[in-house]
Image (cartoon, helix red, strand yellow):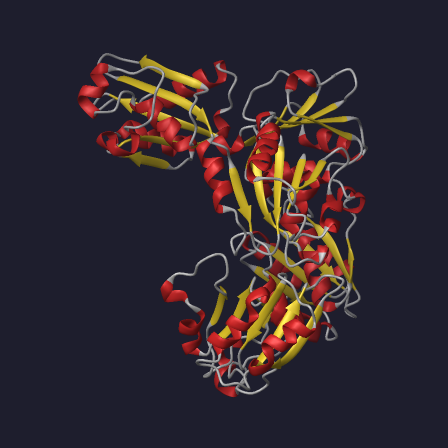
Length: 603
């Protein structure tokens, strides 16, 4: 919220209002009479009447009755009214008064209650029952809402837990949220044809497709369609957008699901493409012939190739923007008047397709609670979890949903791993490949990604907490020391895997930075010898075994004794070696909190 007014109606509320403003510096303070740092108003009711629509939110501090009387004459619609909340003069209760969902009052109520350590009072039924706020989901996930009956009727049926079908025939972050949080009275479907409409009273659908539903329906239109356009020079744009929307509707596609319009650079100044972008409210992408030349189109044209060197502008542009290889609407040739020929085609964004997908997830250092929230959500949604069993605690797989397949890759060859993932992928299922720590640090994912690329399989990486961060936490050490150590080196010793000549340990040791050495306990003598070429023998070291696991063990000492520490304690491959003066250092503290830097924290 950009503009917030805090309105004080009692002397007791002044300090409460100032506390709120410390955390909401964009807020302005208003009060009757003269009070320090407050703008004086003659009448709260008159002020609210004049300024009601100028603010995104009004926070009243004082009696609830004053708040209600002040806003009474200004209230018009939950779709346009600002958020209004009231804080009692003791700061014990924060009440959401007006525009709870759409205006954001409920969210602001929780935030202010947290600031004051107060109780948030929210009476919206969906909030108190843990149900979705259907009237704000579209805004939260950037969908366009459409309803077959008034929205209030949809919301009433939903909060009264009438049997509801949820159709998700495309996917994005929003659909994953709905899958994860679906209430008990909601049954999820991925194909419209599978819904038994005799058993449901309400349909909620996230879809770009125009289905004919026999029950009251709320459609959310995600921006997942990409429109490619070509045209004659100086083509008249009159009526073109309207013609395209009619064609999309005839093809059972919603124009509200368009994400972009694109064309070739030869046409980038054509009024037609700019008119479409403006009327549809979508961005225009312009591609060169080189961008498009490798794209195969279903309807190539010799004439278009002569002019542009691309066999089909509209189709190629749509496929390029969608990163897809197939079209939902192949090239449409239209002419609304003589000499005004244009073409268009539509493709579905590849990432939105209901097809197999692989999420490479960083499990963190071991503690199941140190996986990211996003990583945990993926584990809960996965149809297959393939985890690095020798390195990832099995407890992390307990997040799996019922009927999910959970397999350890510890005894599998790469070929067996690929075969299993591809089997699930080809069925259109969701796979989580679970790696220890952060998968991009010694995660052995490069060969897997090469395989996914070779077979044109979609995948994504979710980062995890690396064990070097767990080491810093376990050692209660800041690995960077102002004016002394500002570099952290993540590396390994040279064992069976050769090290590049310029990355030999003794060369890296010259900087005397904080060094975190992975996978090197078995060659600790060599590691110690190389480090001693540049670090003093008394440099602090720590050997950290199974960081954050139940059997975690940490041994501190000096570099000259590192090999002995590792051997005497039978530490294995899953040991991180940390070396440097940053270990246990309490000197050279940051100057950020000195008086010279206090201006950074002033409003």
